[in-house]
Image (cartoon, rainbow, N blue to C red; front, side, top):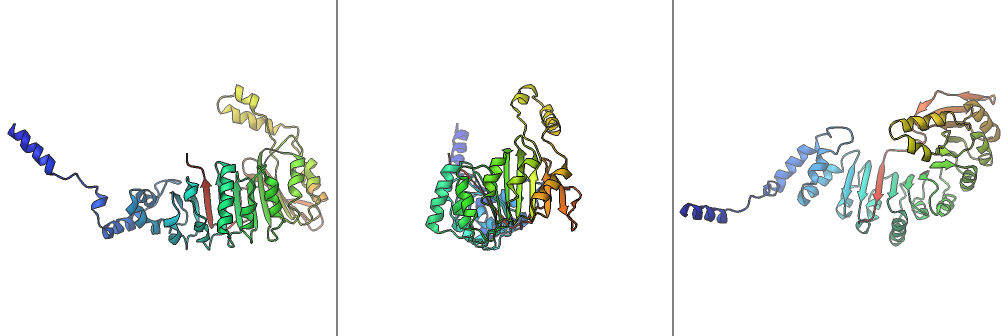
Length: 352
């Protein structure tokens, strides 16, 4: 009984074990952070040790921020932009900066990045978030003069973003998007715009291309990715022959396949094989050189044509001095428009 009382007394007077990190001084923790910052990720795509270590607690995160933002490529998830502004001045590339709380998001984070040349924005809840983004942009009078490449996904009526980028040269988006005409009307005002890239996996139709190209008459380089909806490429030539500034064109040759029936009968890897097979035997496929000749004949300013497929390979054709069509070697996923690697990616979603 006495032994039990002594044990209880010891337990009562012994303080709970402090967290190891909490017992370290800032100077000691700083030395550890400096060591961790030099370590590389164990595998490709894995988070860096400094990113993982910075998530231990608030104090560690604050001390780690300068090292996190020294990396060429950054994946960083945060709830408030306040602590980040002073660390992003020299940021070369922020590959993914994601926030789940739009209320806490601040446009001043973008303004604080004077070297930012490429901005990617993807919205998980397009209409609600786009409305809030437009309001925030108007309130802050957002201006991003250094951004020359803007890539957006699921952003209805993105005219406010285009107006914030006065020196925009490259624009990339998915199509069709809700209120896309408002976005493309703003593109008309971009005198420096050189390259536009659009992606449509529901299948491009001639009418869609005509409608889009009406807004892009001043563009020198175009890229249409995705699939063709039961149409031959040579039937699309007339959609481009009015574009007197167009010099380079990349367009998909991949045919859209209705997979509803196939998915009921192929429940394994054979589904992809069957889709590939049906695309290969599609009656809408054409000889590549015949397609190139048709485009060069109708589009007088066109000097380069690339025919893309879903493996990111392409057949490239050029117009020789004597007017003949010359085919170059096929290439794999090379840089079509030479975007600089100074990127900030914003993936925005509403907090549930």
